[in-house]
Amino acid sequence: MDNPENNNSDKLRFLCGFANSMFQSAGIHCGKSNWTIAVENGSVPDYSKDLPISHWHNFEADLDQMLKLGVNSYRFSIEWSHIEPEPGKYDEAILSRYDEMISACRNRHIEPMITLYHFIEPHWFSKLNGFEREENIRHYIQFCEMIFKRFQHQVKYWCTFNEPALHAFSGYFYGQFPPHQHSIKKSIGFLVNLLKAHIAVYKQLKKIPGSQDSKIGIVHNVLRVVPRYSWEPIERWVAKFMTEICDELVVKFLKTGRLNFRHWFAHIEYEELEAPQSYDFIGLNFYGNVVLGFNTKNFFGPTCFPHQIMGEYHLPIDSEGFSRAIDHISALNKPIYITEIGIADKHDKIRPHFLNEYFKVLRFKIDNRVDIRGCFIWTFSDNYEWDQGYTIKFGIVDHHRVERGSAQDVRKIFRNLTNKTNIDNQV
Image (cartoon, rainbow, N blue to C red):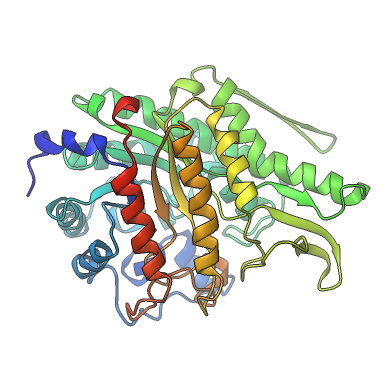
């Protein structure tokens, strides 16, 4: 295994790799959680049919295949649900497997980036009403502190939460994620508590000796809703409202420390002026902006403009939106990691075009001195895509680890970025 003290050379690398959540690729091996209960209740698709090849058991071979695709980094989650099956009781066998996984990355000179919370929480935590209650945040802090102390000498990059705004919207307003509620007030309250938890975890981890070498950030999905017809008042109002709760509340809070949601049906304010200092980097997830409005396919719903190509997940290829999302996040004045970009395309027909368009934008931003330090594609292999189950395919390889044609495009892109990018003066 590499000596962690010799890993400073990694600072000069532009990180290129894949992003994944362990539950989505190995859910059957994870513990009892909010999502396993939802499966039992029939409110989300069944994940329990094991994939032909399980990432949990095939981790090392998957890393070898990723290396052949040109990666030098890998972002994945450590799942709380099977590590802490009961409050304060940790499963040493599971932790040892994560030891092996992180060592496998290090032995291959693959920089691990760990996500501590990717929509999944232990069932016992959900029974306490999870992050709906501020007093429960202490359980998450304790878990993060234990994980950080165990792995900090091998893991430099940490993400506290994946997409808090999307989680709040999907679980408590739109309702397709557990706990399947439909309350804007609960949705914003849940979001506030996730942000409180992020700040508390950041402060606690930064107190730990040696943490000055670690980079701790948060991942935000820039999802803006665009009206199909800018002159249509209903479309404009819905787009503005959805953009506020899915994007602007979080970005404004991270920049100013203030969250102010003021509508006739709910008024929620939260202020924490230390928020702009509570993250070392910002993770940017971007797939595409939602074009919403009246159309011939679904009457009023997601659609696209005539010049756009529609993907399989209600999102168009949107390179202009990607460019604007980078500019939007640049206003936070933090190093940026593109923690997820990808497209659902089971026939692999439009993915090469998607990759070409998005990486042209990325290359342009880097050449123009935007402080972008890495990019991760969602995802390596097809996996469980939440409320969509196994029906949509984001993988560069399929469930059986057979490469799709776009794998050749990924090799070229990663080679180009790692060979030409020099961020020495930004570190």
